[in-house]
Image (tube, rainbow, N blue to C red):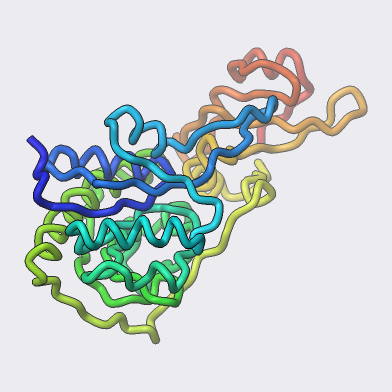
Amino acid sequence: MENKNIKFVFFGSSEISVITLNELKKNSLLPSLIVTQPDKPKGRGLDISESLVKIWAKEKNIRVKSPKNLKDESFVNLLKEEVINGAKVFILVSFGRIIPNEILNLAPQGILNLHPSLLPKLRGPSPIETSILNDEKDEVGLSIIVLDKEMDHGPIVKQEKIEMEKWPVSKSELTKIFGEIGGKLLAEEILKAEKETLALREQDHSEATFTKKFTKEDSLIDLSEDPYKNYLKFLAFEKNPATYFFIEHQGKKIRVKISKAKFSEGKFCLERVTPEGKKEMDLESFKRGYKYYEPV
C-alpha cells in the first residue's frame, strides 16, 4: 500500500525514469504529480508520441503535466500548490530539460537528482554510454545530488559504487541496474527529506570529468579497427542510435545497421544486420545478397 502521507513531485521522461518509478512504487512511494516532456513526433511517420513516463503515469492514474514552458506562471503555481500541500522534495531522473531558477528552490528540501555515475566523474548528458565506451568496469556507480544552477554540480546526498558481476554490458542492461538501485536509494532519501535529515557533502569539483551529447555519427563503426572497442561501441549505442557501417553495393554507398553482435575469441562478430531499405537479416543472408568482406 502506498504511503499517502508522503508527497513529492517527480520529473522524468525516459526508460530509466520508468524503472525508477517502478522501484519507488515497490517501496510504497508514488508521486502526487509527474512532470515529463511534451508529446513529440516520432518514427518515420512522425506520429505524435507520449513519453514513456507519461504513459506510466496515466496507467497508474497519477496526475501528469507536460509543460512546453517550465517558467509558465500557471505551472510554477501548480508546483507551489504541491509544496503547500506537503511536498518537501522534488525528484528528477533523466528529465531532459534544464530546470529554471523559478523551480529550483521551490521544494523545502530541494530537487534530488539521480545521476548514473560516481560524481564528479562523468558529468553531463551521456554517463551510461561513456562508461561503457571507456570500459570503466571498476568505476560503475551512481550518485544522488541536490540540484543547483550548474550541471551535475550540486552537493552529494548519496553515492554507491556497483560491483559488476558481468562486464561489459549493454546500455539497456546498465540502465536497468541504475534505475533499480537508484530507485531503492531514492526511496530512502525521500524518507529522510520528509524528516529533514538529508546529509549533504560538497563534490570535489577539481576532479570533475565531462561527457558529451552523442550524435548518430558517433555510432559509425569501422570494422577494421580494434574489435573490442567496436564491441563496446555496439553495446553503448544499442538500439538508439544503433551502430552501423557502410558498404559499396551496386555502385551505391549503403548504410548497414548492426542489430545483434558478440565478442568472441578476440573478434567482433556480427550476427544480425539491417541493410538500408531492407528488413533485418542474419549475417549469412547478408553475405549472400551483398558484397561483404569480413575484417581480419
